[in-house]
Image (cartoon, rainbow, N blue to C red; front, top):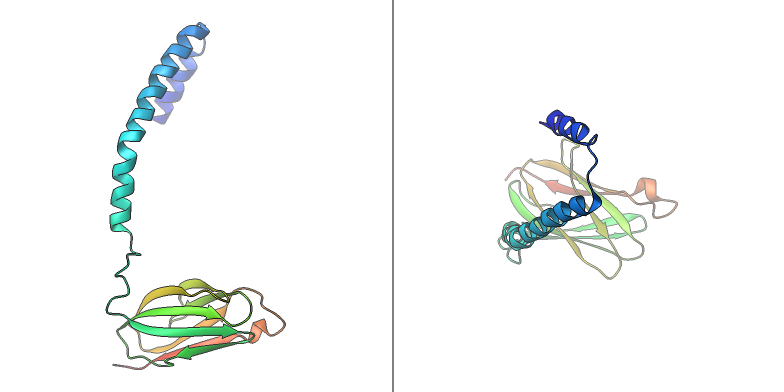
Length: 157
């Protein structure tokens, strides 16, 4: 189909078209395209808002975990939750920005979040697999950045 479009465009490019005729057809198409976008945009945006995973009730039924970061540590409270826990992890920082990655027991990155002084950013996860979940700092935060690691233990439920 794409090739056909190019063939038609190439074949019609050899014909001289008066500017007034071209402008008229372009404006005709532009008006209809704008009307189509104006009619469909509210529907698409509305559906997107309704289906967004970040609703105000997303934290309902989740276990709260607080992670406070600082140069060069993580404080995890509580430090342990049972396997199968649906958690909402709240991240903040005592000093500078920290980009935090949460890794599952298998070493796979589960999510990232920014920890900033004076703000609380949240990450919703389900901790299905028993084991040690690691927190690593992704943003250079000082000379001890390379040693910055936190742990969340998830024993069998």
